[in-house]
Length: 302
Figure 1: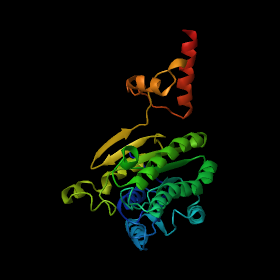
Figure 2: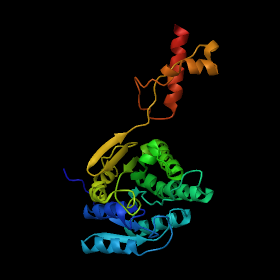
Figure 3: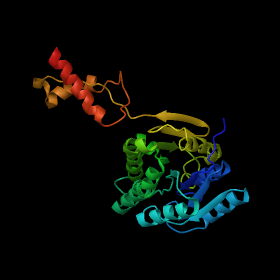
Figure 4: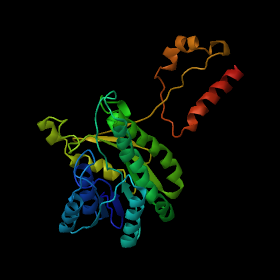
């Protein structure tokens, strides 16, 4: 089986280098027409570069079709204009990979509020803006594939990255609502958690590990998650040839008797409340209420 993106139009944000470049090149290789979006050359989001033009040139040299776009994901009007130009040129937008991002790492006690706000704006708000710019068009097409880029920092935490972690877990949460809202229009939304050697991680990885964690090893997971037969609402990690899934789970917990619904009662039953035996993966937020209602009904019958 060969997965093809022929006749698909894809937008990749932050595609001037690293992961985004790898995604854009592989999409084009497999037949997609690609909008290569990139604004800057520095990982803190400052500066400008012709990186997007270079990726377009690579794609065209290999016989593919691509255009560059210098819009900022943090400006909704620029995202809307990008989508409009893609539609005008190629008739639609079928795939969006939200990859653009910056880092401004510091411990929370030393972090300037402006640095917290900027990282959240680029990663979370920027992905929402790019997605919103595509959303109605994808509904009209009755087809869309959207990929959010989260992080192990968002899922599990990492010292010195409170801003980045907050934004990245927010993206997983955005996925979980949009996959529900897009289902009836064949819009699938997934979350990727990449581990890759890029300009954003070049001083984090040792040199030998840096070589192992090339972006080309993440691209297969990214492209699968935006393919015709992709799942929806998946959280998939990828790096150095290893691929895995992650989930947001909950347990059944404990229903406390009225007399025990106190601070002391929660403390006394904490072992049961925090017991992971029988964890399950809710498919929507309503399932939390459903578990509680089921427990109440069972208690009333007993």
